[in-house]
Length: 247
Image (tube, rainbow, N blue to C red; front, side, top):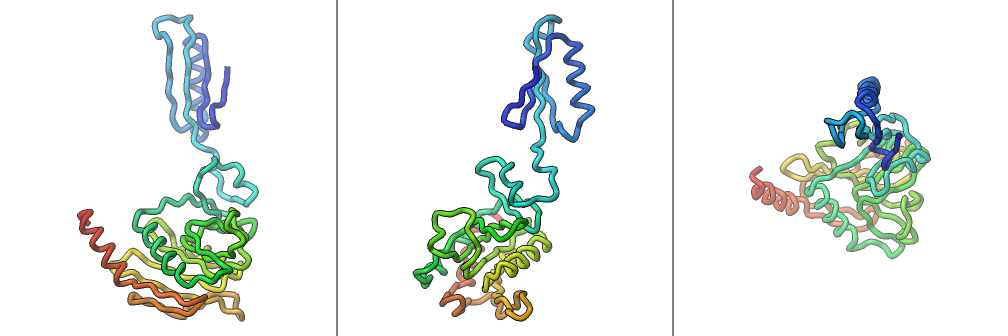
């Protein structure tokens, strides 16, 4: 009897050791489908007692290289994901990464217009190959109960650079946000001792972002509305936390 359990485990009940050997040969023949094999026997001494072979399979979605929004329904529920330029990304942010996102959100909240709200780790729908999750994003207030959020009307996307992110991923996200006409885009680099923020605005002529400012000091801007972020204070805070952690 063959039974699929939660899409991850195949349970095969066999009657004899000969059948058990066949199951073993199957798992060896198809290594791409079966990552790890466990064999459980109810009674090794008795040839006629039923025995059970359990094979843990690698999730099939990990082998897929090209994705569209329609394919996302194949993912397990409650799985955090990003779809960027047709590639599936499974983010796993650190405490520092999340803490910076929260501090940026609080700074943006202070003067956020009534027409918009500030969200963190929010999926936004751009096109069939892009459904990213900006670390911080300013979206229209009418979308507070929607996910993924339609990108139209979004004012700002913020990405915090982490050690696990590649240059390609950051470049693809910038391209996606520009195509979606998000007028403002910030990148915060947390990898050095001093936090660094690069402020970019969408160029209406080229359709690409151009840098209009960058600093490791106190960041102040009037776009998309007045915002102040004390980067040195945050850098000092994280230096103390790293010292407590022995780093």
